[in-house]
Length: 70
Image 1 (cartoon, rainbow, N blue to C red):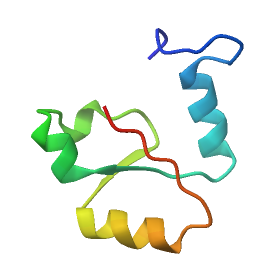
Image 2: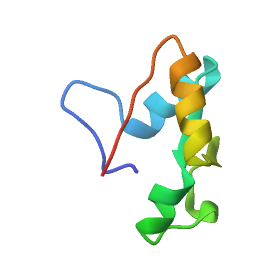
Image 3: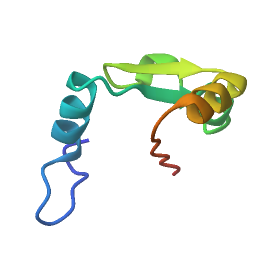
Image 4: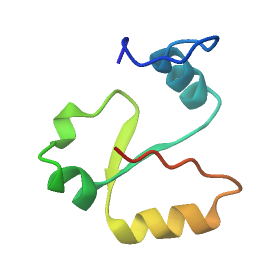
């Protein structure tokens, strides 16, 4: 993840660490992740694999969301 960055911004790993420290949740849709051939043990620290129904429930209940899709 060290290679992911944008000019004038901290590295992604630092941004994610701060996000989690401030109470943010890193929730990963299990069906989407598995369809890409990834496994739960490949997630970064603090990330949690969840079912699609939980993705919907969490996003509709949240004050704000950020979705990143590869």
